[in-house]
Image 1 (cartoon, rainbow, N blue to C red):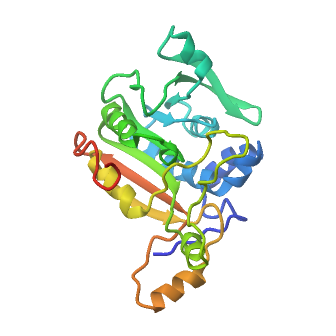
Image 2 (image 1 turned 180 degrees about the vertical axis):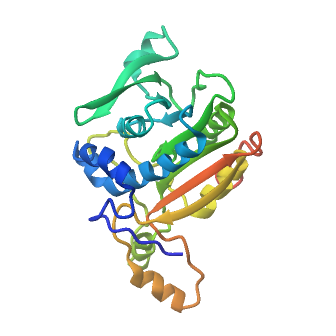
Image 3 (image 1 turned 135 degrees about the vertical axis):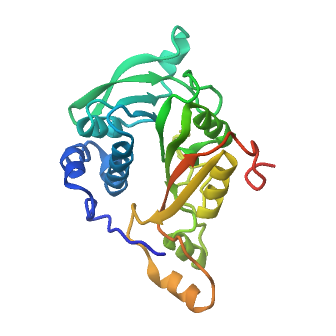
Length: 274
């Protein structure tokens, strides 16, 4: 089903409680302004997920801008939030597997425990089955060599029946199809940088690919798409459907709530690894 959320209305359908907490944070910088709709929608979904667990919920966010910890703490003061943060200065000291720090935006901050790790190489320094929820927003597409290493660690630290929330760009969005029909690559953010920085996407997923990878990692995933970056382009998709192609899940962002039901099933899924 084609879902459409208009970027110019980032708080469309978002609960009042989330809007009150999130809106003052999203003018912090260009990144948060650009991602306002996605971040607001993420906070809305996580509010419901945490409420289902209760005030003693334990959450791990993989990579953090500070937005999620601040919003969740404002909504649920008793929730425990840890984060991974590849702080190379702290990691190089080698003195501690975690450290206490403040994270935040727009003058608001909360205290968290941070793990300065590389998610493709380092084990998360925490006991098995610690967390109720793990948050993995706009991270998996940046993995350079081994995304299943990260997902295997997420599986390990999640409680049985715990939830993994994932968001990642959709390579088969309506804009992706439009680009291909016009002779361009469908990628969302694969461009190299003239200044040689590494911040780019290394692999962009479709709904079927992400669903398959999460199944291999021991999860029972619900996966869907929404337009959370830009307005959808319906004409190209409609034309393909009129031509007889079965096309769905064309929002520009893939979202998934995946329940841990087993240990990792397949460490190196075929199609993703060779």
